[in-house]
Image 1 (cartoon, rainbow, N blue to C red):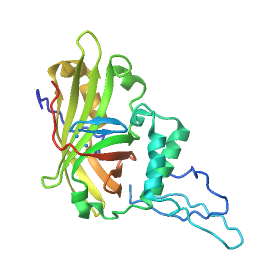
Image 2 (image 1 turned 30 degrees about the horizontal axis):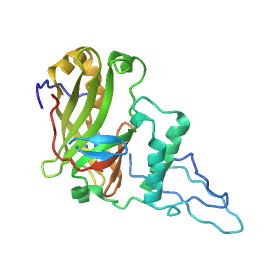
Image 3 (image 1 turned 90 degrees about the vertical axis):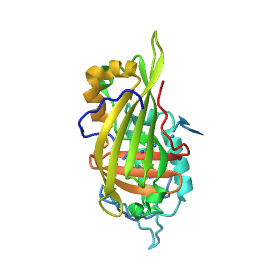
Image 4 (image 1 turned 45 degrees about the vertical axis):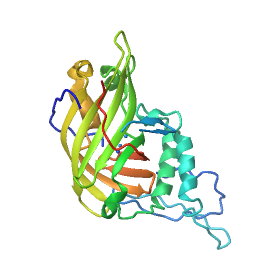
Length: 271
């Protein structure tokens, strides 16, 4: 992956109920729980090129007749609404309005209630391969964004994850575009290992990280500790939804991650 610079593990990055969207008031919303609460390579998606536990119960009864929100919409319909809600927010990395965040989290909970793979860690073959982050509640705000140069001359590209099930490894890649006199692209690559903790949870251990090319390392050298602290996946991850094209997870810090599948399964170093 180019010049390597290993750093010690720092906890952070890891491949929702208030909004009831256009529902009649004579509906009873059935309760559900999510499993006690990580972060994949080239295909065109609606979000660009990819190169490589509880919820509140709301009940309304009318003339002893009720129906459940759960199952009212199919996962495909909910995912369509979710993608619409995610448009224009840059994966949530620089924050989103509270109403938008609540809308996204409500749709996430609807999907979690219809999870077709309730024991995802027992079906690891469904998790293997390449994934692309489309939304996360991890944010880079205020002085952190300024220190990392993400307001002015550095922009964030794709957030990618490649999972090797056989080896128990995950490789996260965060792409960067640097503007200025010498325009170049680069990436932060974080390698981690994982092991089963339950039927739906994995424990994740940071292994190493690199920044390539060396020009990008020079840009981030002073604040590398801060950068890695944001994106390091160490901790545990609960897989709360998994189908053929989408994966949703919640980590030990309360973050939500939504990823969509991509086809490329190899890492490509930046030049």
